[in-house]
Image (cartoon, rainbow, N blue to C red; front, side):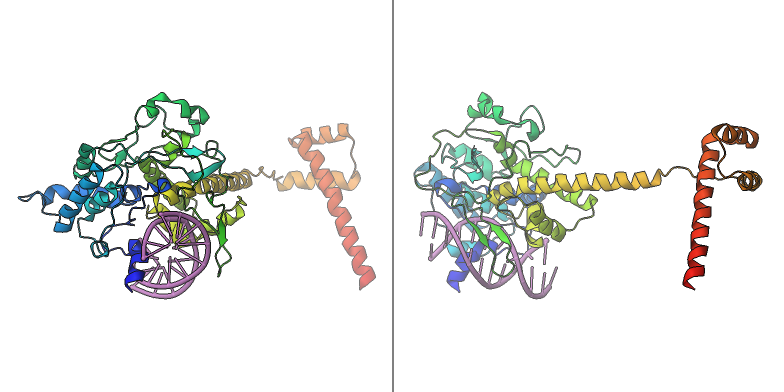
Length: 408
DNA sequence: ATGCATGAGTT
DNA sequence: ACTCATGCATA
């Protein structure tokens, strides 16, 4: 029971909107900022609510464990080598009502959310974010509710990761800021343009990089992309966090914004979360099978781990783009259907005249057709086609009559 | 949307 | 013993 609790404790969420709590995993490759972004929504709400709680006691919303863990976090930071502190299970079975700071703090023992680079051949491999350069002030700042601890990734001058191609890796701007700054979180801008990262993100790369493992879900036969990204002994660790185009996609705020946009566009397409999950298999991306409704839901609600979000994002982008393209096509087809040519209708008097002409000469010459057209005030082509159709009609009638005679 | 469970990989 | 990604079942 206890073991089980430990094993799944990060899933044990209180009724409050506190999302996934991931305890620290201090392996090199697992510098997660899951709590930072997973709790983004909660954070936002918490931030909004906070001012009210400040009447009197600054820590009104915080319990003792928070304070205790704050101290722990600070302590953890004081010793760079000590990235690891094992929280007491009892402290993590449940989280207090104003938990974000608590969790935040817990994860603060983890190195700062350095935006790790991707290794080109394995796009989903989260290479090590270096532990490191977080100082006490940073921690305090993160802990400060006024900032909600959301890491700010100085956005590029442009807004779309589509443009963040390989050359982005040479942006000295990023390299010179190994430690991210913490700013108040941005609210999602509904107007932000959905970008396509498919160009910048090699979605074809297997999701499961580090061990190349794609395990099959026993019951469903789904291909579960294991996105466990952690330090692989022997694999090269970057000594300096290099910033590539993928860092943008991995930016928690970008992820949050994307998830929101994704949801909106999915709904616009009239597709359910389950549909999306199933449709992913049709993408035929290597190592990418279907996903459950749960997972899609969790993606949209940012209740997946950061790495998981980052790995799923390009796949979902791929799906979204294809789905929207298909949708567009359908709409166009529908529009085409509506744009049916106007059917010319020939009035009864003219029709009678035409029938009279037809009785005399079913195959009038071009000149004759022109004459008739002029006489009836119809387009020559209309008259020509009428004769064609009339001949065809007659043929049909003859044929059916003949058949009827024979068969019956 | 989410509690609980599972299997695989990691430490 | 843990972490993680994910799924099933159900609220």
